[in-house]
Length: 324
Ligand code: UT7
Image (cartoon, rainbow, N blue to C red; front, side, top):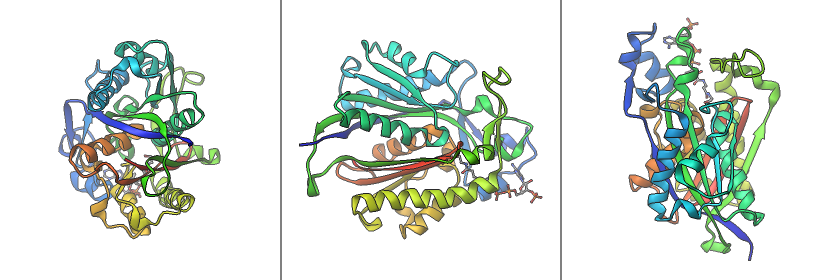
């Protein structure tokens, strides 16, 4: 029987500090009405000044380990999706490894901005299917507040901080209705579109991490088209209809983009896990944060078919279909 990746557990962490749209009105020329109408965001969490991406990743990981009731020592892989690592190197993954006390294992970061978690999940799934890893901790963690330009109201009101984690485990695959775990992942990138969303700095250019620059309207148009394509590819590859999907867990950038994707799938919004209003856009952390919220609120149950999809800087985009 083929080896498949099952989802053992999820976990997440949000920093304590909540920043509302009203708080932002005091420092930026904006309104709660504009932000909520255009993006669906009401508030976001910001990490404390001395709180790093690896601190948040660690807390999400600990929650996932607790839920799975397994020890950190039993992990043989740690993959972290992030665009905002504590340092240029070493990776956040190795910091999490050390903090958790995981013995020598595979540990590295993946960088695909808001699509990062789908990319990391795909990498972990393929390591498992290849027989190289057995139990992998996959994390999406971001301190987006560290790369915001407070002079640019078109971007600084949209992002938030946080981390989400998922533990995958190798199992013997079953077929038919007993099929479980990750069914497929689909990844895409089109580097010709890189200038639509980027940071105006980096280690090999300015020597600083830089700040987010985005052509929002253009990104919006591509997001709707690309994500619908990724979602359709996931359904077609698995011979699954949209009606069979129990939950859509989309990247949480904009409620209007999410609604457009749900509409294309003819899926009622009640079957979509929505966190954008309270989390804002947490980039690579948004899908695992939303997935964990779905699980902990009792909506995503064992046996449910869950479709994840994301799009971000690069431009990168992708989807993953899994039975929880
Ligand atoms: O996660 C990675 C992928 N990212 C995304 O998916 C984001 C995609 N883009 C979006 O979500 C939306 O394009 C935004 C939320 C960023 C913007 O919404 P929009 O409906 O596309 O607005 P817009 O950029 O067309 O701007 C409309 C107006 C402009 O004024 P004028 O030129 O029409 O007079 C902006 O100057 O809104 C103005 N504006 C603001 N007003 C108040 C821009 N930002 C703000 C603001 N507060 N914060």
